[in-house]
Amino acid sequence: QVLLVESGGGAVEAGGSLRLSCAASGLRFDQYNLGWFRQVPGKEREGVAARDMAGSTNYADSVKGRFTASLDVGKDTLTLAMNNLKPEDSGTYYCAAGPWEAGASWHSPPRYPYWGQGTPVTVHS
Image (tube, rainbow, N blue to C red; front, side, top):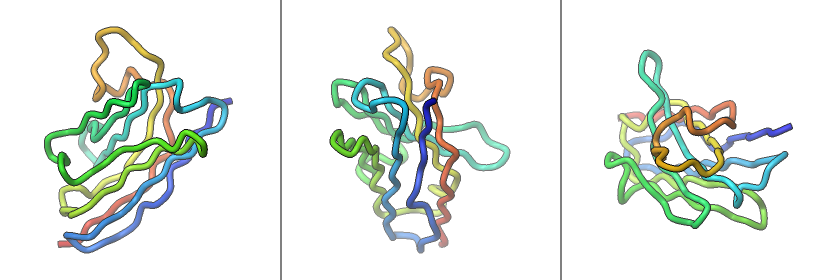
């Protein structure tokens, strides 16, 4: 059974930082493409960052230069370091894992069959 568990969410003031973590059981993160998504009520889930099996990362334009996704292989933990947070970064953040798929977009939720339960982030202005 695959289980992904996020942690590290919370409330911060604009300009602050948070570090999200995602721990896995039932799979090895280094064998999957990994993603961070966020969602606010009434909107579609949005791809924020991704790390592929080769270690390459991709970011949404809105977070480039502020967010960093990384993988601790030894701990099998995916992290998302978020700096200079803005109110529009608020939402529930999810980590996701999926196998390699030719032509699949990193920010497309359907390509990830495994999801965590989400951790909330609130950025106050």
